[in-house]
Image (cartoon, rainbow, N blue to C red; front, side, top):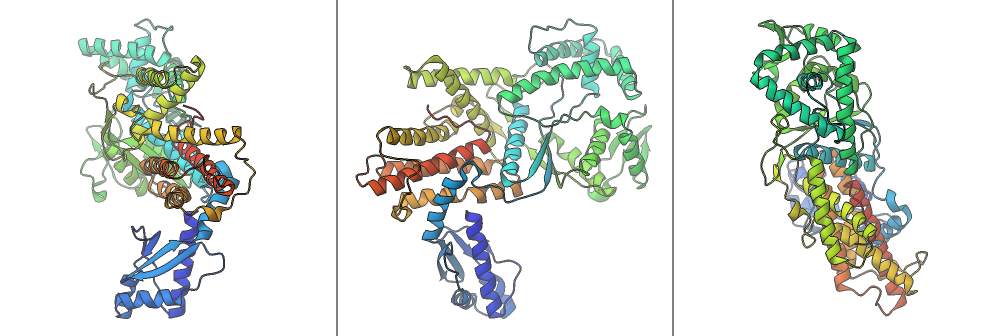
Length: 567
């Protein structure tokens, strides 16, 4: 709803400038503590007109004409600033639109197709907490972009022919595979044993190199051994992702770009730029004119391609099918992603938008799959759900076991997702599951509880015969400060989605969801709802509770978090 208001403000200012014979490409619209939106356009026009910006602001406001039923309320000058507030029409239309549009409220204003890749962990073991920051950021972006109206295709790019997979395949012929375990965990067991053996006997590394050459040359039995190992690992990884409400649409395999000839073709395209040179038998790309001192290897001395080379072919392919291409990558990919973008640019191919995230750690310390010193995401999720169960059992001991387990799962997964995504991607963070589950703090359980409270209020009112969903409330009665604040916060949902979709910063929706829950609780704390004596006031406030329920649920869904109706 706020986007409609902003559009009307834009039209009103542009029309006023046209009337005055003034023109600018930037109206200087920005948030303000003193209005719902402010414009500093007078500053921008001061040099052009050689006039006092305060006088320009006054002339602009005097020239503004608002149509009937405008969402705009008051427009005033404060020195050189133009402050604009919403009108009653905006508030009442917001409540009506939320009630009518329900789960579609706040979205559907963008179009186009986006290909987004996230997680893409090597299939040599289970996901750990470092991986799931990638997954949560990526999936939240997917949900934001879909909410905005884009068609989104989500990719997990499978490394099915790199050194790690060669080691796993090699390990299968030397160690027993424990089929009683979750497959990605059993893969990690043999991978760790294989690395230990390779460290003891470095001469065996040549066997790994041989396997990689056989795969690249199309040896069918070696390819099958790689494929079997990858399929097992991915099946386990999918289970973990599903537990966190994360689903990928496609699992493109890097080997497909070797077998299709795409890797060979892109190497030839890069060669044609004159950027390649020999480096002890390896083929490297010179990107110094793009600011990279370090060259990028695209072919080993033995003629095999690298992950980077196959990634270039993959991105060339993606560029044909998406209006926007987005990669979610860890900070250790900062250099290589920059080189990848530069190389694609040098051959005239679309470049991806790259979301780089810093790493998340646990208080226990760092993790490494190769050394076997890591905490699987499955173990972390299990621990969190157990902690959530204890909290639910303490608060609702009389409830049946099924209820406690379902709520514990929703709260536990919600706590993980929220605590990971609430921090801006470029900032490192330590995930403390006990802190994330604290119901007294304003994290996921607080937002989920606010939704459950709204559901409980409506159920109570219905049980007491005090409210009917179809009742036409008199929205002009919603004039209390906390009522107006709550409506404005709900109306801002589309603007938040718009900002997140443009800037690719999912923490913004996390902050918004918390603030929305705060606004709802403030409203309920300071005005009587079910106990309101006047029927029309009670009905209007219950309509507002219903709107809060809807927008809280929409916000939680965008965060990939379940919205319990009872907690």
